[in-house]
Length: 178
Image (cartoon, rainbow, N blue to C red; front, side, top):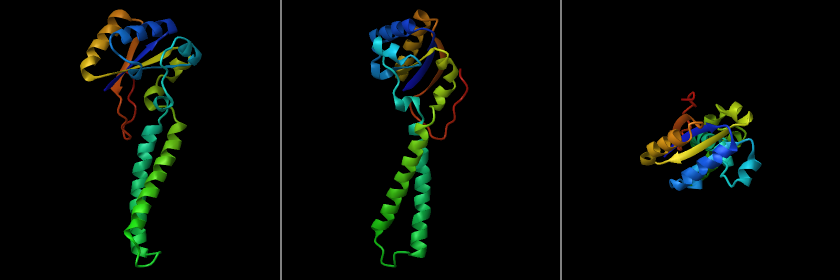
């Protein structure tokens, strides 16, 4: 899926865009708004972005899993070469090392990501803090052009900032806005 990032100035505009997108078949699951005015979104029944979409928890957890996996390989090599538990060690010990260290990496990475703003949204932090509203629209590849045309034709005040993916690549860094 593609994620379209639009920026608009008013909640009235956000509400009109939400209604138009609902008529076009875009559900609340594919339409999210990041705004400083959370109470206004709630009063107007507009779907606000959730914690996972606002933070980098998934990307950092993926990175933590990779670091944990590499550390678990090193730990297993150490245990195999030094045999701290004796020569008659079960294979389950290696499995436990892999599982524990990898999951520990996921946990630590997730904690770091919880404290970090989503890298794709951080570029627009100043606009959001200034009172603007960031609209995230998730569209299938075949629906993307239709959504873009609707937005350009009907809501020229909503500016397309970027087109990205809903998938999270732990190695990819945010590119400047379109």
